[in-house]
Length: 496
Image 1 (cartoon, rainbow, N blue to C red):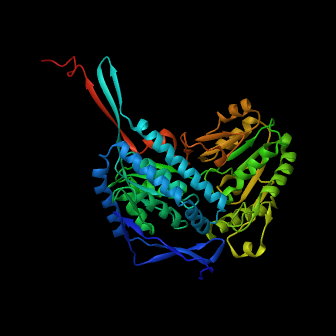
Image 2 (tube, helix red, strand yellow; image 1 turned 60 degrees about the vertical axis):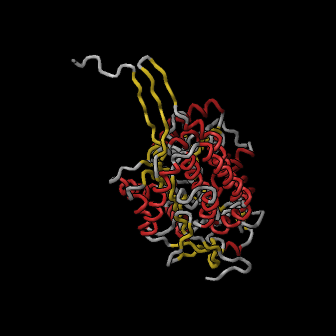
């Protein structure tokens, strides 16, 4: 591999008990725009180092859990300001290692800081013990820190899906060991280090590494909670590994999110058509809550497809993430590119029509990177793999439906239930939404455009366990502790 002229590779190390720890082995992270360029190096943390990180977190927890909420919030606010000051540097690193355009990388920082600020604003109230006076005496409902949190974050939104765990865990009085994805380890590690600089040694630890490190995080008895965002199959392995010590878990997993367009939807609404296109192809379709299958009422289907293609061709510009004209960058890694290509090819073999979308800004750039031209897939069967599997890439099937009961059934037969969206007259759309099995349903918008960090986020069925964001996303890092002070200390029917 070679280094692109003018770009020095970044090196990150494990952070254990406040100290940078070198590893004998390093891995290189390539630039998905130009895989010949090394963006940086990250360590292959050993199992022994993972144990050190967990033990450091366990020791730090004993002191950190006793700090008052004001100190925790003050430290987190200082970390927020440091991240904001370093935003441009972080964004450029994120774009290089991930492949997302600069505007998208800035958007990830925006969401991350918005959540961290919300958590700071709400933590005191969310964690305040509730005292209830009643006829039987007094009951205190306390929210105690849970202990050492093992946080495992994914590559698609590496900063946002790390800070979604770090902020509430620390504000609740826990310590944490973070393991970023090897497909996007650099920017997340840098942000975690910035946060760690404002907290006592051992409260935040960052490790990298292979499967044995993941096994240690999910089996070590000092770890009391696992916070994982990623694929459903990986989550099943985590659940099995953690079963021996019965750890608390928050799992935000895969989704096959549907967008449903009712007969009342106005296909001539250009802004709405732009919103659905963005909901399909933002971050090159690599978002858990992206709209991955589109159902359109048959009465408006043909016109919808026509308007959709027009809107897609206006918005989608495939190119270098640093080109300000680019709206869609490369796929993050070769494995994901090949997976999406396989689904599209399978659809073709089954007789579907595949329509390329958008404009390639520079063919040479496109050819050298992990690029895929976004595609629209028509004529699929409702049970084809490209419809029922999570593509996690720049392709989307559009299918007709005849009535609401049919489309509700098609939505709910999925093993997933993360997010969904319903488009059309508001009252009718809400009525349909109430019948969908999903953690979040958005009306007349979808994906990140409809996300609100003030409210809980998570999935039904195999899309996850628990909720993040909102007050629930803070309290999920606590154990509810009930303290009863009854007036009558003895049972009334116990004989003397």
